[in-house]
Image (cartoon, rainbow, N blue to C red):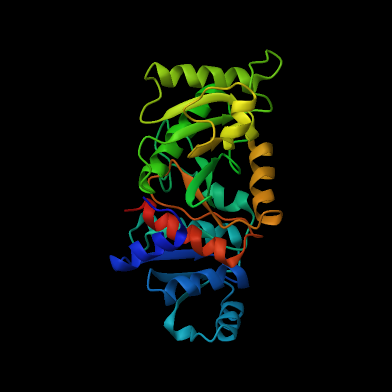
Length: 300
């Protein structure tokens, strides 16, 4: 089991894994720095799509020779996203990565089932943030794709996160279903969903994990907080996965990790047939690099 991103990097480098990563709209210093770092570490072979002159300028500023990189000129972000997906579909690359572009432009290409088929029929695309927390890796989902998932969609989001957890070496992960309060409130749909998800897991309808909720964030993360509130749970205080009630809560939560707590994290898409790197434009180069590592592990 990986306890941090350094262990993840060590594992990838020890197996001399070198994936072909295609970066759509590579003309951005932070995302390009992450890709350059990954190349220097020997974990990827990069393909850079975007404004060629700007890419060359940025590479030179990083002490890199443009001749060492495969650069494909493109001045339109939607076409850059389509080009990256097309290269992965045609086996010319292994991992598409979002660069300096609107999330909608990148997602439009990823979701094009007829052109690329990255999301299987009946599947559910979801985002997850992997973070280093108290000497281990923990997952929060969904923080960027599903705006207001209903019960059935939350089941699929859990299944996606459980699969990701397995890639990180977490067997039978503990899933905390996060809500504003730890009791079922008929006026709060998220608490009703949480109770239903917990019961479904106990009856084996959600497999390969332990699910408990509703749990407020304090008693999900702290065994002491759960004890003070009289909560007996196999999940409280030791979750591997935090299922957020909706995108608003998830997005604010993950941005708080970055800007208040300065925690190390990575962003990943789940439910796809190929690993995909989709980070925020404001993520740090370190977080973008860790997202590359996570995508490589997902593809193993």
